[in-house]
Length: 336
Image 1: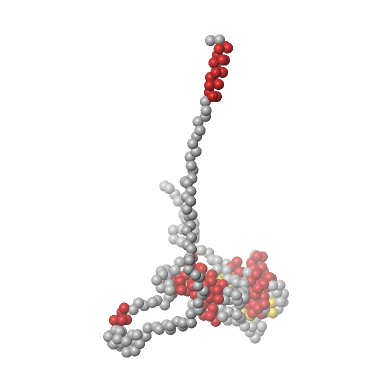
Image 2: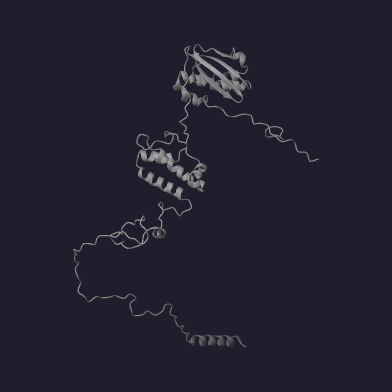
C-alpha cells in the first residue's frame, strides 16, 4: 500500500470517530428526596389564655402516726388517735425494720468510713483558722495502722490510713492558742497513750560545790563527768587528758562539747570512764561533758545539737552468727 493511501485512510477513520456523539452519564442521586412535610409539628391552642390566680387555701397540717407503746399487749390499742384498735407489742416489734445510725453501716469498713468523713467535715469547718509551720506544731505520736486495725476490728488499708493521718497532721498545725476544743477531742482518739512530751528527764542540779554531773555511753563504754567552773583543767581516771588518750583525735573528742561552744578555758572537768576501748570511752565522755555543760548553761543546747554532742550514738558492733566467720562473712566455699 502506498504512503498516500495509508495517510488518507487514517484521516478518514479519525473523522469518523469525531462524528460520533458522546454517551451522556445519568447522575445518581446521593441524597434521598426531601419531603415537603416539616420535621417538627407545632401545636396551636385556640383557647383564651388565663391569668395566674392566687389561692388562699391553707395546706392541711401533717399528722404523724401516734407513738407505739410496746409495753401493751398485742391486740390492745392506745384508745385514741389513728392507732386505736391496732395490734401493738412484741409482734409489731418483730415486723419493724431497724434503721442503722451510721449511713456506712452496710459498707465493708463502716467505722473507718465514719471516722474519715467526720475528720473531713471537721477540716472544712476549721480550714480558715491560722496555722503554724509543721516544724513548730506540737509533737504528737499517732497510732500505727496495726493499732488502728485492732481498735476498729476492720481490715483498713495502709494507703487509706495514711490519708487520715494527713488530715490529722493538718488539724494539728492549727495555732495552739486558737485550736477549738472540738478538734482537740477528735484528735485524742488517734493519739498513742504515751506522747513524746509526757516523759521528761529529771532536771540537772548543781551541788553545793558548784559541780554538774553528766552521764554518757558509746558502744560498750560508759563515762561520768563532773563539770565545774575553772581554768580548763581535765582529769580522766586521775590522769591528764594527754596521758590518758594517746591519739590527738581522742583528746579532741573528749572535750569537743567545750571546744564547740568556746568554753575550754572556763570549766574544769573530772571524769571516770569504764568498759570498751579508748575511742569508745572518748566518745562517751563527749556526751557526758555535754550533758553536764547544759546544766550550767541551758541556752547552749542548739549549739551543742548542731555539733552533735547531745545525741546518743546507737551504733554497735554486730554480733557474730553461728556458721559465719564474723557477723556477715561466710567461710570460703570449696567445691571439692
